[in-house]
Image (cartoon, rainbow, N blue to C red; front, side, top):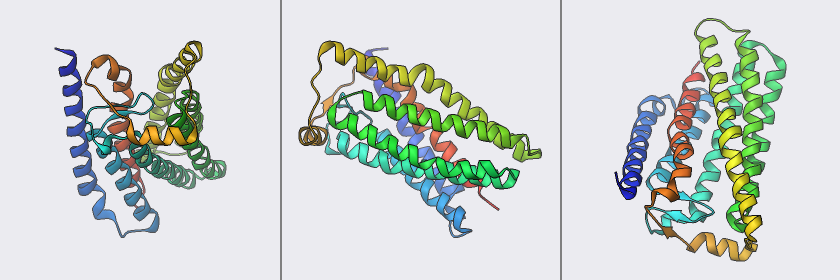
Length: 260
């Protein structure tokens, strides 16, 4: 298979997953809107997250390198990162709400308290990500991903402890969540964070100049490098595919978890 064909096949898969996820949300989550306050929040938050992931699946990009598949204003790093920021904060709130609910059901007060510590570091992570997008300094992305890793490690430990206080179907749901969190932490620790650290070190060795706030914002809004070369997209395929599929399914599952 040619290099360009690999990218187009992968992109077609992303778009198919995006359509499936929107339909899945409409069928399984939207009808639950108008229930309890928490449930309604989950429906809205998951809708934003699924919608933004679908948009980004149709217009994939690599922020700092400014790579995209379609030369369109919709592919700008500024627009894509803005949408991603909103979506990731929504996802963070869902995680916090879900952990709070698990703590209440398991009757473990410190897990309930821990749920309030989920959102702040993940909001801070957005600031570091924006720093990288604007300046082209990969260090911000390494810190962003590290904050996600540490936060999800805490969530995973909390879920594992909560599982010990539960039984039946709820035990398997919470234990499965702990397993997913562990897998996420392993991937971030072994693959994602080291990738951005390597890029940061490479740029330091090469004397890569960083952009100012003004120049960086203009660059993020206007510069796009359209490419279908597999070598450009290969380092991003694993995390983008998981982000736009597994993460969305977790978001939708959190909706179902909040059903009374």
